[in-house]
Length: 386
View 1 (spheres, rainbow, N blue to C red):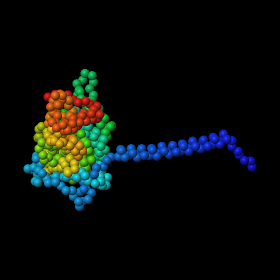
View 2 (cartoon, rainbow, N blue to C red):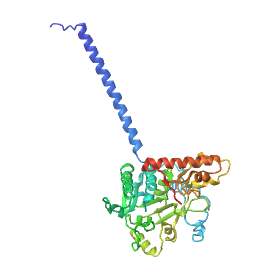
View 3 (cartoon, rainbow, N blue to C red):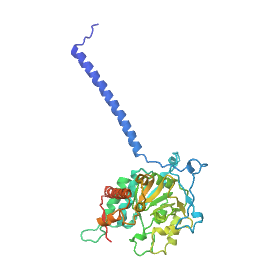
View 4 (cartoon, rainbow, N blue to C red):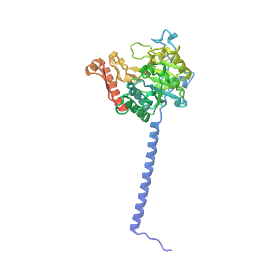
């Protein structure tokens, strides 16, 4: 049998082909590994964040140390020992308790009563989406906005309706917000389109949820995890609100509501509040004889803090601490009408905190709100008219 002899050129071709095949295989394997790492990273980034449960859920025999109960400054005379206060330790260790929660039955809800409130409500829901809250996000709006047809040329129509509809579409598509139209809460009201006729009480009819939380706008959510923990792990009660103890801190009972939907409660509220004119959601605090009060703070965390506190700070002021241990900054500023308004420059300068460091934080927060308003809603500030 004759031997097959390869020429020098053929050997070169074989070696070159082998090297090309080897490097192609290595390049493929490197790309595959990088792809898997990228997919894993994306899955981690998109996975909802689960809040830490309080110690009472982790270890039933180890209750957190609770501060002395101070009476509510509004309900103190009605509730013995200051009322039934629910405490949450926001520094609790991790547990699989959060993984066992059915987050599809929990929701953060915002009620929009007029076009002016639309952007503020969507900004809160957008913050929850950005911070990967595992609970659902729901926007309640007047049903007439969904049924009213777009006016033709020359027809009289609501000039802001198209803007609100556009914002709702953006909220649904970009931030996973569920849009739900609601009827006026008090059916006997003469003017169904007025602000006070639409209420968070309508959320009691949403029986596809076990629990609903609503926070007052306007504001910025800095840390959604404690809000989710309160939503998921607060003890069962038909209605809960903030434990308001300090006068002048800018925080009020109706800044946060936590409720359990129930058709019976919904119908009872319609009968109880039907003669209350004018009606607003503050009246919900009087409709329940023994509401659960949610503690606004723990040794390590504050649930809601008012930007108005910056006007009364003392030297020295720790700006890092002011922003690092709080979930929600509420723009309840006694010196300005709201962060969504453009006020005259002289009035804004006069409203600035006297403390230099507090002024920097105050200016920073107002600037962040303005930028986020443009980012989320595509809207600039509104002109303020006295």
